[in-house]
Image (cartoon, rainbow, N blue to C red; front, side, top):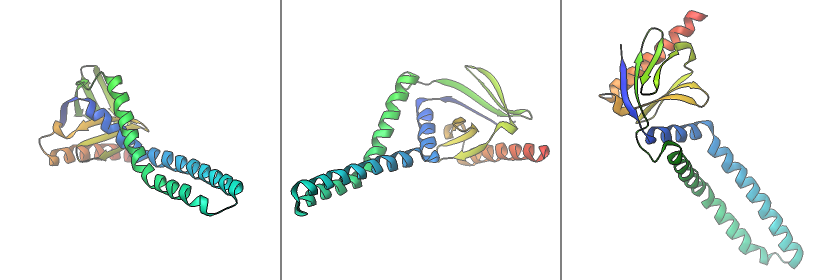
Length: 179
């Protein structure tokens, strides 16, 4: 039986939130919304300036500033989003300490999670997707729910990949058996 044993830290929780935000398109959609609002405000301000002065030359400065801000905004917004997420998560999990101990084991019944908060089994049919980052596996059981398995739970990257492949294989076998 293949296992992964680890202490889940603040970093895993933060990495999952960052992965979820990028994966879901949340940041992209928020940036698009803010840029659309920004463009509408810029058009209103420029229209008002043109109406009040009747000259096009007065408009060049606000347009230049507006375009400059539109270029700077997306990376700045990503930084603010990450900073705020990290700050709120630190408050939620208590300052970045190790949160919980976990031992994930692959069994015939499903993915068994034994740890400091109790034991549970996730049936293979409940596993939606397995995604990978360089440092973690995310075994999704819902749209925003996953087992977060850090790379340090394995001896090597090959072991982490073998664990992921076995989870995917058992999930796929369960799906095939049901059809």
